[in-house]
Image 1 (cartoon, rainbow, N blue to C red):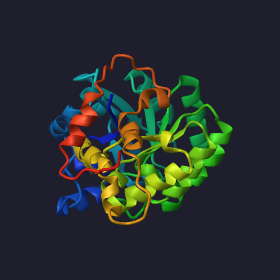
Image 2 (image 1 turned 120 degrees about the vertical axis):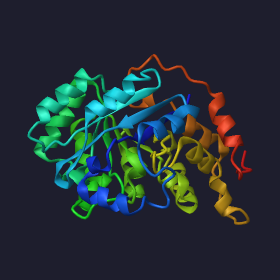
Image 3 (image 1 turned 90 degrees about the vertical axis):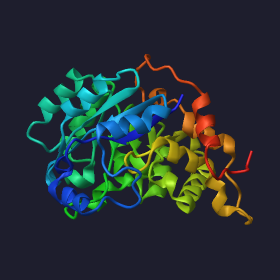
Image 4 (image 1 turned 90 degrees about the horizontal axis):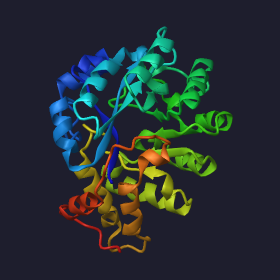
Length: 305
């Protein structure tokens, strides 16, 4: 089974905040696989995998609000292959209503962006949200959507700030998007310390040298089992991200650096993210053949067995 733990969707770029919308209006980042996060492109990109998380976004500091109702409507068109993650801002005046709505809409988790919403992960309002998540069995996804607006508080994105959260709520499942980039090592150390801390590999997966270093560090720290697959759509697509992961050893070819075993990469791509994050969603039926088919389509493959 292949589950993409990080995809995004919006109907209007202004839902990402005016500054971000203006940036995208000038030109979509050249590194993006798709120029926008519309539903048609999302459907095409995720047709090759078994399921995907569709992540909402709410960060009042930067004027971002992708309506959770928009996400729910899209999920409802194919509920067996899409899982909704509600975008939540703990500092919003409507926080209690937003959390209740997330439950009513059938979301399986919530997504927070401390940097873009401007709150420290241990802010009292945020701690109440984590407590609520524990009560309802929902995981927390920690995000920092790109491009990053100037008002974002980068320090609040550091994974190390979540150590107190994980100690206070040991049963809370936490997943960092993009391996906590740019603080990848912090995230990996945190995962080694707390059994319910995970990360997905989008963004990093499509940067050859960075993904090798990230996976090498994860392997040395014995936390490869905390890594989940993610493409970061529209930053990339599941197919491109999987091909890039299986090509992880290309950048060290001809060197004495130790290769990442292909079997470990396969485990990341096919790991059961639902079980890892404590999500009960039994209607998804997966095929382990998908990963191999996609990997074999890559133009460059790692020779490591």
